[in-house]
Length: 216
Image (cartoon, rainbow, N blue to C red; front, side, top):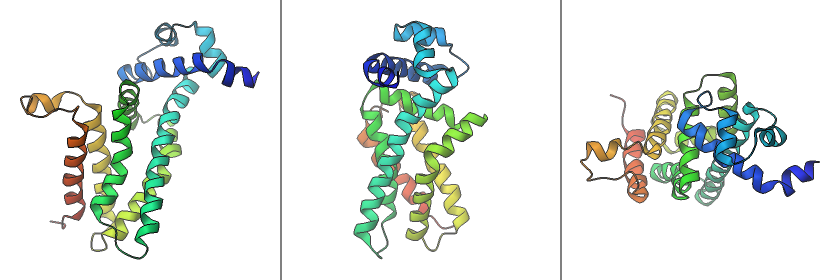
């Protein structure tokens, strides 16, 4: 039975996950039903129950699938950079770039990547037990590693300030990559949220300066 679910039914399972990711991103967990997800995936509701059991489990798998990959890529980049740096201080700009780049690269993958990033932004505001569990399960390990790296790179900045500034970084990249269209409105179309190279450059410049800024 397990082989059938994960192998023979792989195409159907992936279609359900993609449809669920888009709808959770656009409407939130409570804003869409299993029937709507099934309609978008062009399957019957029974197939969702077969592969995932419950709507909550479907959310968990849709979120964990991309989120775990994102966190893993961040850790891979940091592992390589720390090994190369040895006892030398790593530039803050490099740490910030390594943290942001996997998310920007995910946005480059198109609709599926953007859907996950939008869903992630929604999940950051979810104070339910499931929301807290998913954030802790997926992101705590990589976030703590990056906080520690920033503390080492910025020995004159207090731990408390690093904690606050790390949260500012989370909010910045999630809003930017959610691509709400506000940038185009405010800039009168001089800037575009679709220009991901520019987005990454501007975020790294802004956030690095913020991390290094002296306490006022």
